[in-house]
Length: 390
Image (cartoon, rainbow, N blue to C red):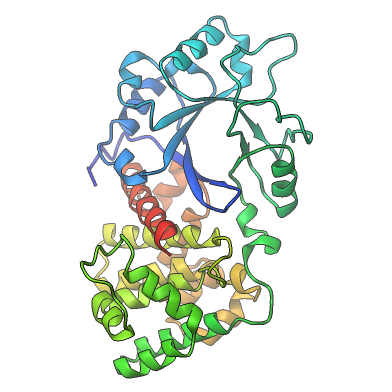
């Protein structure tokens, strides 16, 4: 990734956006505000790696007002990849409605965030809306006649997701994937996940490949996911992989261990909806690994950082206390401490990946904003690929 100036790079809060089929479709980005917002936007969207890192997803830039979108800023934002979510209160400002119409005519997609102020009419071009569902839920049927996709923000529960979907929203962001009613399969049949944990144990003690094959052959669902994975575009193999021995040799033990960790989150039926915890766990894992590398961590330390990120959502997935999961996995002490108490350096990094950290929080962890930005790009790039291939 390109190296921006670590002393001046802005913080960017990123939230994934999913559709009703549990597929990521976009990323919401809010750039740290200030009088120099146009310069900050240019720094972020002028990063050569940004659009490549989030491809094929779109970026939705959240703004309080369109004034910062000057021609030099727009030059860094291709209309086919970037849309704008503009606060409805901006319509109170002189010229805002006209500017939004101009942006629409330039080919940009626009979401009006919130209800228009009383007595103010939205421009006819603004037919797609966004709503903060924690503050302003929309009534059912209200969006039927409007052009979408409509964005529901801060959807933080299964109930809020259902209400938003019934109201006509198409895209959703928020903490609803963590709700126990949506987070994982609560049914008692968890044989595939138990077998994955067994395989991870075999890998940790460098077991013979035949032992690994024997475990894989006992689980049709896991076998399906592994063979689908190694034949996916992520590996670009020239011949089809049809045996477990080929799959193990292609991946290598280190990569096999990583993918097995992620396969814990894979859908349990081939025709089921994807589990939204999968890309979230992958993002945490990749970001912890990137932060570990930035801190000078060796390969083994980076592997443990990656594992910590993946395992940090197992309590949601398995509907079990994290203490019980950690006891079963026999993890290194510092990994257990990070998962249970967010202790140590690894725990501090994990806590940062669970929030939109402030500059003070990053400084306390010894991370500069540019380093955090690079770790975000690496993490979302990896999570997007995982979500498309698992």
